[in-house]
Length: 435
Image 1 (cartoon, helix red, strand yellow):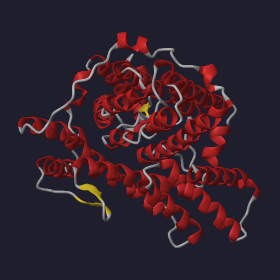
Image 2 (tube, helix red, strand yellow):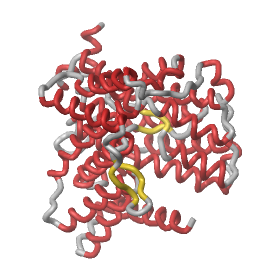
Image 3 (cartoon, helix red, strand yellow):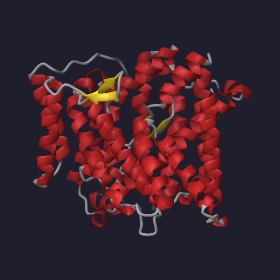
Image 4 (spheres, helix red, strand yellow):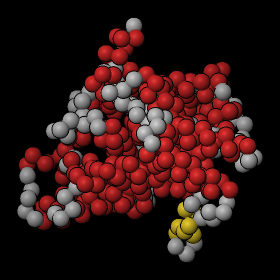
């Protein structure tokens, strides 16, 4: 049985083993476990029961991650997306006064649209239409993005009214501990210690508890709580003409956040082919589409691929076992939700900083001496962290690529889809600016 599983998940070809995959799965879970606490806190503002959303968050993350691991065999974990949950709550429900049941119906429709476009091959065409230099730029941008998240979680970068951001107080015990954790992880990486990131996270967690720096808010969750949101979505209400733009936003942002994350994780893991194609692409897209539909049915906002998956990849994860382990741990979290917050931000922050730095290796794949490539790539790299959105960074990169190639007279019929994407992104940006 074990040998059959190893063949199915291609352990030999990928150069991995059970111990590495298990450690990688745990690492991925620890870096994204915050979603079990954060997602319910955001969505509960709509009137959704906190305990039910907690259970739905865990179940949808478990289902999506396990499905990705089993069907697509990639080390990519899924969970309700940050940003999309904020749009669901603050824009759709609180500003537009749409009920959370109807908003879930809109998420469901966007997921069905995902499935349909995957079935007919449109999503695959979109991914293949993006120049491979922008793939590299997305990976770099996401590296800066998650490193920036890590720096803020560590308290090393804080808000500033004068300059937007500034350096934090390194004398703060949590910040100092995060920096020590980063040094430990890097040292273990240099010494080629397996599971260096996980060891660092657990060590910092233990020290934080010993110093009395860790506190967490007890939350609830469990299978029995799902009844409060399970199948409570209002699909007929979501068909209302006024909700068409909401469905589109859920679809559009998730589409490009997913594609960006997919590219970043597969490049970091070395799983992209020499012709820049991604094996089993249909299965990957199918898994995240099904996860979004399932998430809306259980009672949570759009489920998407998580950039924190790169932490598991950095820990050695290469196969679907990494995602499966992460999914199983989310199932455990549904029962043990009150204890998910025991891992402090000071422990996961250095992991994100380290992984972010590792993702910048793709910067060498960009032709920086060629303006037609360099400018779109730069806009993609810099705007992903500065706008806090993978979709925004990729959108500006695609628009710049199209405009510059048109200006240079290098328009090609085979690039028609790229120009269509540029036009759609431009319309989206203009719409957001006007609203």
